Length: 49
Image (cartoon, rainbow, N blue to C red; front, side, top):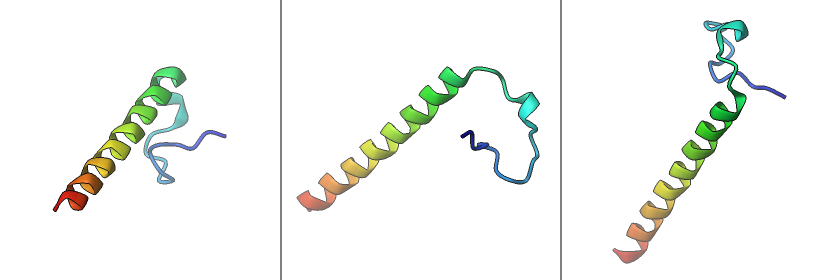
């Protein structure tokens, strides 16, 4: 199931999305990993203080 990253407003139709699902998936995974890393850094900083 594909969920549009542009939200339900429909500003960008699906036809205009570049057909690179692998790159998009990698971008999403990297963004998630970065968010987890940031959360981990904040948690360790909170533990130290």
